[in-house]
Image (tube, rainbow, N blue to C red; front, side, top):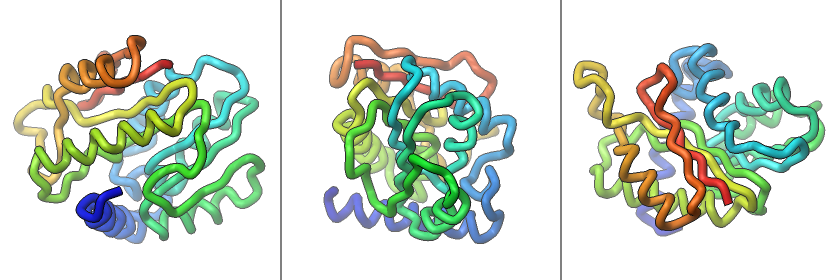
Length: 208
């Protein structure tokens, strides 16, 4: 990735490392409200999965909470968690050290192609970056997800349809229609926009 994006990801890593240090291995430790919303979020993202045995890259894996959801819903899968926060990766490795077919790497992007790619929450905290700069980062990351997934990928964003009084300056609220159109034109004819669940966000599924 380009140097300015590396600087951006360094800021993101520092932000989430501080959250982990403050809240530990909890939804709050990756800047989510709680377990109920986190589970609902994972449920939407995992709609991309259509086969019973699969490999998956979790980009921005945090301490690995998605693995717990996958383990409760699927029997045969291999999982690779990728995160820019070294402390997050260390926590995940310790947390899941007994789990087979699971690995965590400290990196900006996956090192191998998997059947599926998932990115949960990595586009939310823009930390004072301009909308233009953050959208550029978002697009580059979608390219990475596309390049490292064989069957499809899924990601979520906070929605621009959020209530004004709930919106915060340090968060990025994406236009779901714009990203749906981008994914249709750039990656696949088979794209789904999920915006019918009770969170201030949306999920996009790109099937290949």
